[in-house]
Length: 397
Ligand code: PLP
Image 1: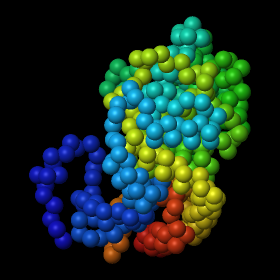
Image 2: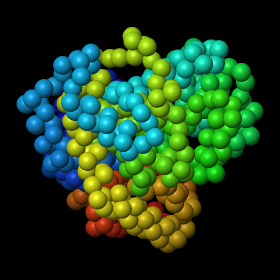
Image 3: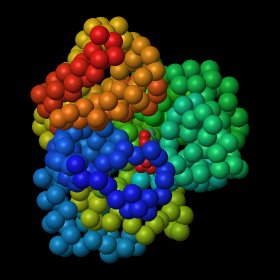
Image 4: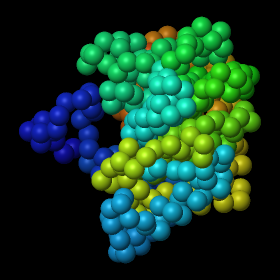
């Protein structure tokens, strides 16, 4: 066992409680720590590594592009950003893409774009209805847009103009609309809240309501987009066409890349309104192209659906066996509802199991969340389920 250097660990700012281990390498669904212990990774950077760790297509894209051109400046065109934007536009109802570096930054852009549109077309309307328990990021505006309990008091004063409705309750949205309301913004599946899907009926009714009231519909697909739910973009399952969509996490598969996508009529930024040093740089967008082409290759999305079903069935079986509260989710974004608040303890026990660990996440005390790589194998799912069964036996057997 190698002892870690405490002074080295303490050089990093304390922002969360980190386990005392250092990951040194990863491959596919597996990570390895500084002691050589292996972990089956069902977190994947919080649904970020769409193709798992160090996928050869990503490594090849990074290697190729880093030998060609890394950063000419967003003030000039570069080919990978054009290629990725063209692919996104071709596969969606959106006409224009602005690339950014994180989900929060893409959402800040969406908020700015909606407010700009409100200034131009809706006499300065600026309020954006968002949802209780929603999560949109950690910048000031996106924290204000989020509905995490207590976040409205953190770092006060926060950004004004984000009244909160209740997911899947259209009347709660209707009740908040006034002449200053410019948009509604939501996650098609609330991820951090504990994998709570917006229903198809709700998404369709929201689309109709926002059209009727001359408001924009913004979908935050930072977690749900890029195949995570078994379709390229989760809102497509509901057959709706939003005005704005944001992407993050899976679009870069582990490198910092996100996107703000908008329909032509809404793409109203004027020169100087939006930008940033690294936006759309070719190193990141070349990776985005490699990921996009893998996800859209024949059969890939069908395999995500099949693996999602496999995981769902396995979780349901565990739930029935141990008297848990069932499972839910879409595609490979799933949650197991526990019968008690020992989610964090199970996460720790799973990580500490030996000789190999299992990485899980507990967004709520009574919930485990599963976000494996989209190319996870059926065997890896069975292994994770068997290990989880063993851990449940220790506490419920
Ligand atoms: N939006 C959603 C739905 C998210 O799940 C997240 C992160 O978990 C974000 C936005 C923020 O993304 P980032 O951490 O890349 O800023």
